[in-house]
Image (cartoon, rainbow, N blue to C red):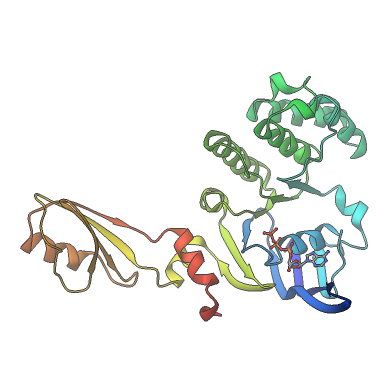
Length: 317
Ligand SMILES: Nc1ncnc2c1ncn2[C@@H]1O[C@H](COP(=O)(O)OP(=O)(O)OP(=O)(O)O)[C@@H](O)[C@H]1O
């Protein structure tokens, strides 16, 4: 049974703007007729450009915001009516803000959370030991949160969100501002938590590497509408962004001329050709091998950035 269910959910805001002495009011539909469901244990990437309606959706799922219309069920309940009851079953991480107590050492924040969520002491100790080890928090436990670096603080925040064994976690930009190593470590940790605990994860991010590393499903939204829901592979295949053939020749030559691919860049003996996602690379390879001094060749899939940029261009929806 689905753990999250939205049926025709919309949320509108009234925005007032002033020009001179005139005030005008206008309605912004931040989320517009959204329907989807998420199964237990799924990791869903929830992505879209700025202002697409991602935060508004997450706020409705946690019960902070009430939908203007439509129905939402999270873990079987209406989030805005049962916000406190639901709080025990969800975890939330906002990359830009901390939920930890600024002046307290990290370990004191964890102790407060144990009391707040009424987690049995044995379970709390067990979880804490696991997270301290996996997130390398040992030396940070006595440090006040305000003295932690962004990456250290984020690791603390993620542990804090998971200490009460939530069934669902919402992660809003969890890797924002982190260096490459911290990002990789965090992704590895989240993948492990999901695999071992079957925690359902909704991940909002602008970092598409987060999506590549973690999400079995990706939902793309724009202007409050779903514009894609499926696998990352499916997303790539659904778009016409071309694949690239990188060809290394024995010597520098004028652009290769073959059927079905076009040279887009010549870099000494290396030439880059593009060809449609729908065609196979094999016939191109044999044409090149038969007519040119071929040394090496590789095929590059369209980057997920190029696929998503294409999705957002207004002509496509
Ligand atoms: N409290 C509010 N009052 C008025 N308008 C709002 C409010 N909250 C959101 N909006 C508007 O709703 C739309 C969606 O905003 P939302 O914050 O959900 O987008 P987002 O996808 O999370 O964007 P970002 O990636 O920038 O965080 C935007 O046009 C925004 O200006």
